[in-house]
Image (cartoon, rainbow, N blue to C red; front, side, top):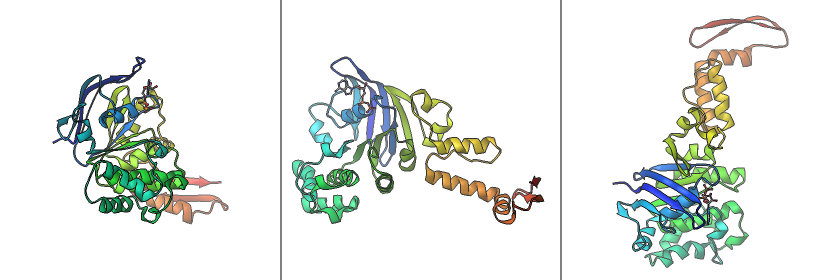
Length: 304
Ligand code: ADP
């Protein structure tokens, strides 16, 4: 059964702004999917509709097969955890553990203590339990907000720009955390590199669904991202150049981790060449030498 399904969802705001047009998508249990799109593409609106904060003008949202409507929104909302873009909109209790306990308490769930412990453990912030959340760094606040959601053990995690506003280290740590979580996830973001680390596939949204595919497919497909005002990451462009130069690039990497992996393969294939070039070849003396490629190809070059 589909964990989350949208069929032909349309939504416009009271002032007439059309935010979503004919949006359909489906997530199976355990799927991690990114919604990629520029500012104003309708990403937050989409998450808010799924979370039951707003009602679609037309179309359907189904959670665990059940149609979401104003009568059952409270019930179905228990299966969804929405991480707001700004943690300050989500955190308001005086201590971290009280804040994490707020959601489960509000939903009248059992074993609050166990749930708080789980929330803190799954986000790696046990040590912060007694701290005042508003004094924490922005990255840690995001974790507190996420811990509060995890404490409710939702079936589907909805994450609105989870990496925005984080310093590089907090960003890397959050990516690692989300990657390690085994849960159905829908992540709205324009951080293409982060998405590439976390998700299996992405849906490109610009009011309507533009296309869908793996992040590698999206950066390879010419102009898809650029047409909607998003940039292909520099590392993907760089490997595009390497490919054009004749190096066998299997698939364009999107993130730095993927680039290191791909580069290792390229070096393995071209191994002797690169090894000889870096370690055996003295540029200061000049002369002629032979690069021997791992594929048996030989190439002569003259060094000035
Ligand atoms: P994203 O999250 O992709 O940046 P949003 O869902 O926030 O996009 O916004 C989609 C569109 O809806 C934008 O044109 C935005 O200006 C508009 N919008 C968002 N919130 C409101 C609102 N409360 N009232 C009117 N228009 C809104």
